[in-house]
Image (tube, rainbow, N blue to C red; front, side, top):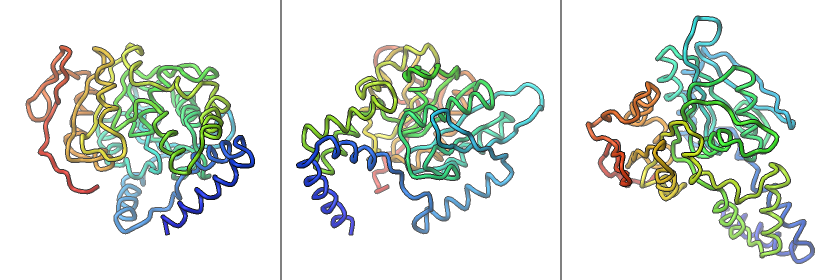
Length: 326
Protein backbone atom coordinates (compact mmCIF):
# COMPACT_ATOMS: atom_id res chain seq x y z
CA UNK A 1 0.00 0.00 0.00
CA UNK A 2 2.81 2.41 0.85
CA UNK A 3 4.47 1.88 -2.54
CA UNK A 4 1.11 2.35 -4.28
CA UNK A 5 0.48 5.65 -2.48
CA UNK A 6 4.01 6.80 -3.26
CA UNK A 7 3.52 6.04 -6.96
CA UNK A 8 0.18 7.85 -7.03
CA UNK A 9 1.73 10.87 -5.30
CA UNK A 10 4.61 11.03 -7.74
CA UNK A 11 2.29 10.78 -10.72
CA UNK A 12 0.09 13.50 -9.29
CA UNK A 13 3.02 15.86 -8.83
CA UNK A 14 4.33 15.01 -12.30
CA UNK A 15 1.03 16.10 -13.83
CA UNK A 16 0.67 19.17 -11.62
CA UNK A 17 4.13 20.58 -12.24
CA UNK A 18 3.69 20.08 -15.98
CA UNK A 19 0.81 22.56 -15.70
CA UNK A 20 2.21 24.84 -12.99
CA UNK A 21 5.54 24.38 -11.18
CA UNK A 22 4.43 27.06 -8.72
CA UNK A 23 1.31 25.15 -7.71
CA UNK A 24 3.29 21.92 -7.47
CA UNK A 25 5.89 23.54 -5.21
CA UNK A 26 3.24 25.02 -2.92
CA UNK A 27 1.35 21.72 -2.79
CA UNK A 28 4.60 19.91 -1.92
CA UNK A 29 5.17 22.27 1.01
CA UNK A 30 1.67 21.64 2.37
CA UNK A 31 2.25 17.89 2.12
CA UNK A 32 5.71 18.25 3.68
CA UNK A 33 4.21 20.06 6.68
CA UNK A 34 1.38 17.56 7.21
CA UNK A 35 2.00 15.74 10.48
CA UNK A 36 1.33 12.05 11.16
CA UNK A 37 -1.82 11.02 12.98
CA UNK A 38 -1.40 11.65 16.73
CA UNK A 39 -3.00 8.30 17.53
CA UNK A 40 -0.47 5.63 18.54
CA UNK A 41 -0.17 2.90 15.92
CA UNK A 42 0.93 -0.59 16.89
CA UNK A 43 1.15 -2.40 20.20
CA UNK A 44 4.54 -0.92 21.20
CA UNK A 45 3.42 2.64 20.50
CA UNK A 46 0.17 2.14 22.42
CA UNK A 47 2.04 0.68 25.38
CA UNK A 48 4.57 3.54 25.37
CA UNK A 49 1.77 6.09 25.14
CA UNK A 50 -0.14 4.51 28.03
CA UNK A 51 2.99 4.39 30.19
CA UNK A 52 3.78 8.02 29.40
CA UNK A 53 0.23 9.14 30.08
CA UNK A 54 0.36 7.47 33.49
CA UNK A 55 3.59 9.32 34.33
CA UNK A 56 1.98 12.62 33.31
CA UNK A 57 -1.31 12.03 35.13
CA UNK A 58 -0.55 14.64 37.77
CA UNK A 59 0.69 17.35 35.40
CA UNK A 60 -1.06 20.67 34.89
CA UNK A 61 -2.18 21.26 31.32
CA UNK A 62 -2.23 24.46 29.31
CA UNK A 63 -3.30 25.46 25.81
CA UNK A 64 -0.87 27.94 24.24
CA UNK A 65 -2.17 30.31 21.57
CA UNK A 66 0.44 31.20 18.98
CA UNK A 67 1.01 34.71 17.67
CA UNK A 68 0.63 33.62 14.05
CA UNK A 69 -2.47 31.55 14.73
CA UNK A 70 -2.84 27.96 15.78
CA UNK A 71 -2.45 26.28 19.13
CA UNK A 72 0.13 24.29 21.03
CA UNK A 73 -0.13 22.44 24.31
CA UNK A 74 1.97 22.30 27.46
CA UNK A 75 2.29 19.99 30.45
CA UNK A 76 3.76 21.37 33.67
CA UNK A 77 5.06 19.46 36.68
CA UNK A 78 6.11 21.04 39.99
CA UNK A 79 4.51 24.33 39.01
CA UNK A 80 3.16 27.08 41.23
CA UNK A 81 4.70 29.30 43.90
CA UNK A 82 6.93 26.88 45.79
CA UNK A 83 10.01 29.00 46.25
CA UNK A 84 13.00 29.40 43.96
CA UNK A 85 13.64 26.40 41.76
CA UNK A 86 15.06 25.64 38.35
CA UNK A 87 12.77 25.57 35.34
CA UNK A 88 13.33 23.14 32.43
CA UNK A 89 11.71 22.90 28.99
CA UNK A 90 11.29 19.66 26.97
CA UNK A 91 10.49 19.48 23.25
CA UNK A 92 9.67 16.37 21.21
CA UNK A 93 10.51 15.33 17.67
CA UNK A 94 8.45 15.15 14.49
CA UNK A 95 5.58 12.67 14.84
CA UNK A 96 6.13 12.34 18.58
CA UNK A 97 4.40 13.83 21.64
CA UNK A 98 5.06 14.49 25.32
CA UNK A 99 3.96 11.01 26.42
CA UNK A 100 6.94 9.54 24.54
CA UNK A 101 9.28 11.90 26.42
CA UNK A 102 7.78 11.01 29.81
CA UNK A 103 10.83 9.18 31.23
CA UNK A 104 12.95 12.27 30.61
CA UNK A 105 10.23 14.52 32.04
CA UNK A 106 9.93 12.31 35.13
CA UNK A 107 13.69 12.35 35.70
CA UNK A 108 13.75 16.14 35.50
CA UNK A 109 10.73 16.61 37.78
CA UNK A 110 12.25 14.24 40.35
CA UNK A 111 14.99 16.84 40.91
CA UNK A 112 12.32 19.23 42.20
CA UNK A 113 12.58 21.50 39.17
CA UNK A 114 9.56 22.97 37.43
CA UNK A 115 9.28 21.09 34.14
CA UNK A 116 7.32 22.21 31.08
CA UNK A 117 6.91 19.79 28.19
CA UNK A 118 5.39 20.88 24.89
CA UNK A 119 3.15 19.31 22.27
CA UNK A 120 3.85 21.20 19.05
CA UNK A 121 0.96 22.05 16.68
CA UNK A 122 -0.17 18.95 14.84
CA UNK A 123 1.05 16.70 17.65
CA UNK A 124 -0.36 15.17 20.81
CA UNK A 125 -3.07 17.20 22.50
CA UNK A 126 -2.38 20.32 20.41
CA UNK A 127 -4.64 19.13 17.61
CA UNK A 128 -4.39 19.81 13.89
CA UNK A 129 -2.17 18.13 11.31
CA UNK A 130 0.22 20.91 10.30
CA UNK A 131 3.64 22.04 11.55
CA UNK A 132 6.69 23.84 10.26
CA UNK A 133 9.76 25.28 11.95
CA UNK A 134 8.21 28.74 12.28
CA UNK A 135 5.29 27.36 14.30
CA UNK A 136 7.63 25.31 16.50
CA UNK A 137 9.71 28.38 17.33
CA UNK A 138 6.53 30.36 18.05
CA UNK A 139 5.53 27.59 20.45
CA UNK A 140 8.82 27.85 22.34
CA UNK A 141 8.44 31.64 22.51
CA UNK A 142 4.86 31.24 23.80
CA UNK A 143 6.09 28.85 26.51
CA UNK A 144 8.72 31.36 27.66
CA UNK A 145 6.11 34.13 27.70
CA UNK A 146 3.68 31.98 29.71
CA UNK A 147 6.01 30.31 32.21
CA UNK A 148 9.08 32.55 32.34
CA UNK A 149 12.75 32.08 31.51
CA UNK A 150 14.03 28.50 31.40
CA UNK A 151 17.29 27.48 33.00
CA UNK A 152 17.73 24.72 30.45
CA UNK A 153 15.92 23.05 27.57
CA UNK A 154 16.18 19.52 26.22
CA UNK A 155 14.94 18.72 22.73
CA UNK A 156 14.78 15.58 20.62
CA UNK A 157 15.26 15.57 16.84
CA UNK A 158 13.11 18.32 15.24
CA UNK A 159 12.45 19.67 18.74
CA UNK A 160 16.18 20.05 19.36
CA UNK A 161 16.65 21.92 16.08
CA UNK A 162 13.73 24.20 17.01
CA UNK A 163 15.45 25.02 20.31
CA UNK A 164 18.62 26.00 18.47
CA UNK A 165 16.67 28.19 16.02
CA UNK A 166 14.96 29.82 19.02
CA UNK A 167 18.22 30.42 20.90
CA UNK A 168 19.88 31.89 17.81
CA UNK A 169 16.92 34.22 17.20
CA UNK A 170 16.73 33.28 13.52
CA UNK A 171 13.09 34.27 13.03
CA UNK A 172 12.97 38.03 12.43
CA UNK A 173 9.66 38.56 14.27
CA UNK A 174 10.72 36.75 17.46
CA UNK A 175 13.40 37.66 19.97
CA UNK A 176 15.88 34.91 20.95
CA UNK A 177 14.81 32.87 23.95
CA UNK A 178 17.03 33.23 27.00
CA UNK A 179 17.55 29.56 27.86
CA UNK A 180 20.83 29.14 29.75
CA UNK A 181 21.71 25.59 28.67
CA UNK A 182 20.65 23.46 25.71
CA UNK A 183 20.72 19.66 25.38
CA UNK A 184 20.06 18.27 21.90
CA UNK A 185 19.23 14.60 21.34
CA UNK A 186 19.49 13.21 17.80
CA UNK A 187 18.94 16.70 16.35
CA UNK A 188 19.59 17.80 12.75
CA UNK A 189 22.10 20.60 12.21
CA UNK A 190 20.44 22.04 9.09
CA UNK A 191 17.21 21.61 7.14
CA UNK A 192 17.95 21.59 3.42
CA UNK A 193 18.67 17.86 3.26
CA UNK A 194 15.07 17.18 4.32
CA UNK A 195 13.74 19.32 1.48
CA UNK A 196 16.03 17.68 -1.05
CA UNK A 197 15.02 14.19 0.07
CA UNK A 198 11.32 15.06 0.06
CA UNK A 199 11.57 16.67 -3.38
CA UNK A 200 13.15 13.49 -4.73
CA UNK A 201 10.51 11.38 -3.02
CA UNK A 202 7.61 13.13 -4.77
CA UNK A 203 9.53 13.68 -8.02
CA UNK A 204 9.83 17.47 -8.08
CA UNK A 205 11.70 19.00 -11.00
CA UNK A 206 13.99 22.03 -10.46
CA UNK A 207 11.37 24.76 -10.97
CA UNK A 208 8.89 23.19 -8.56
CA UNK A 209 11.67 22.34 -6.10
CA UNK A 210 12.70 26.00 -6.02
CA UNK A 211 9.13 27.07 -5.20
CA UNK A 212 8.90 24.34 -2.55
CA UNK A 213 12.07 25.59 -0.81
CA UNK A 214 11.07 29.25 -1.15
CA UNK A 215 7.92 28.59 0.88
CA UNK A 216 10.23 28.56 3.91
CA UNK A 217 10.92 32.26 3.37
CA UNK A 218 7.23 33.00 3.11
CA UNK A 219 6.29 31.39 6.43
CA UNK A 220 9.40 32.20 8.49
CA UNK A 221 10.95 35.31 6.96
CA UNK A 222 14.27 33.47 6.51
CA UNK A 223 15.72 31.48 3.62
CA UNK A 224 16.07 27.73 3.89
CA UNK A 225 19.88 28.00 3.89
CA UNK A 226 19.71 30.34 6.88
CA UNK A 227 18.62 27.39 9.03
CA UNK A 228 22.15 25.96 8.98
CA UNK A 229 22.34 25.92 12.77
CA UNK A 230 25.11 23.39 13.38
CA UNK A 231 28.01 25.69 12.65
CA UNK A 232 26.42 28.50 14.68
CA UNK A 233 25.88 26.49 17.87
CA UNK A 234 28.89 28.02 19.61
CA UNK A 235 27.79 31.57 18.81
CA UNK A 236 24.90 31.58 21.29
CA UNK A 237 27.49 31.80 24.07
CA UNK A 238 25.83 29.15 26.23
CA UNK A 239 26.71 25.51 26.99
CA UNK A 240 25.28 23.07 24.45
CA UNK A 241 25.23 19.31 24.99
CA UNK A 242 24.77 17.18 21.85
CA UNK A 243 23.83 13.50 22.19
CA UNK A 244 23.55 11.23 19.20
CA UNK A 245 23.84 7.57 18.23
CA UNK A 246 26.06 6.53 15.38
CA UNK A 247 23.41 3.93 14.53
CA UNK A 248 20.73 6.64 14.12
CA UNK A 249 18.95 5.78 10.86
CA UNK A 250 16.80 8.91 10.70
CA UNK A 251 19.24 11.75 11.42
CA UNK A 252 22.78 11.07 10.27
CA UNK A 253 25.52 11.22 12.94
CA UNK A 254 27.23 13.70 10.61
CA UNK A 255 24.86 16.30 12.06
CA UNK A 256 26.21 15.64 15.56
CA UNK A 257 29.77 15.97 14.31
CA UNK A 258 28.95 19.37 12.78
CA UNK A 259 27.58 20.53 16.12
CA UNK A 260 30.57 19.13 17.95
CA UNK A 261 33.02 20.98 15.72
CA UNK A 262 31.26 24.33 16.24
CA UNK A 263 33.33 25.48 19.21
CA UNK A 264 34.34 25.14 22.83
CA UNK A 265 30.86 25.64 24.29
CA UNK A 266 29.53 22.52 22.52
CA UNK A 267 30.10 19.02 23.90
CA UNK A 268 29.35 15.89 21.88
CA UNK A 269 28.34 12.61 23.55
CA UNK A 270 27.84 9.37 21.64
CA UNK A 271 25.07 7.04 22.78
CA UNK A 272 25.65 4.19 20.37
CA UNK A 273 23.15 1.37 20.24
CA UNK A 274 20.06 3.46 21.00
CA UNK A 275 19.20 4.62 17.49
CA UNK A 276 16.98 7.64 16.95
CA UNK A 277 14.01 6.96 19.23
CA UNK A 278 15.14 4.80 22.14
CA UNK A 279 17.86 7.31 22.94
CA UNK A 280 15.37 9.69 24.60
CA UNK A 281 14.73 7.23 27.43
CA UNK A 282 18.12 5.48 27.66
CA UNK A 283 19.41 5.48 31.25
CA UNK A 284 22.99 6.60 30.37
CA UNK A 285 21.58 9.49 28.33
CA UNK A 286 19.33 10.60 31.18
CA UNK A 287 22.29 10.42 33.57
CA UNK A 288 24.42 12.52 31.23
CA UNK A 289 21.66 15.12 30.95
CA UNK A 290 21.37 15.29 34.73
CA UNK A 291 25.12 15.88 35.03
CA UNK A 292 25.00 18.59 32.38
CA UNK A 293 22.07 20.37 34.06
CA UNK A 294 24.01 20.40 37.32
CA UNK A 295 26.51 22.61 35.54
CA UNK A 296 29.26 20.04 35.15
CA UNK A 297 29.49 19.21 31.43
CA UNK A 298 33.18 18.33 31.61
CA UNK A 299 33.19 16.11 34.69
CA UNK A 300 33.50 12.34 34.58
CA UNK A 301 30.75 10.61 32.70
CA UNK A 302 28.67 7.64 33.71
CA UNK A 303 31.38 5.14 32.79
CA UNK A 304 34.38 7.22 33.76
CA UNK A 305 35.35 8.58 30.35
CA UNK A 306 35.62 12.32 29.81
CA UNK A 307 35.38 14.78 26.94
CA UNK A 308 38.66 16.16 25.78
CA UNK A 309 38.88 19.93 25.44
CA UNK A 310 41.13 19.99 22.39
CA UNK A 311 40.08 19.77 18.76
CA UNK A 312 39.51 16.01 18.95
CA UNK A 313 36.05 15.15 20.26
CA UNK A 314 35.74 11.78 21.94
CA UNK A 315 32.73 10.12 23.56
CA UNK A 316 31.67 11.16 27.07
CA UNK A 317 30.52 7.60 27.53
CA UNK A 318 30.88 4.53 25.36
CA UNK A 319 28.17 1.93 25.04
CA UNK A 320 28.50 -1.48 23.40
CA UNK A 321 27.61 -1.25 19.74
CA UNK A 322 24.14 -2.64 19.24
CA UNK A 323 23.11 -2.38 15.61
CA UNK A 324 19.72 -4.05 15.95
CA UNK A 325 16.91 -2.64 13.85
CA UNK A 326 15.10 0.28 15.42
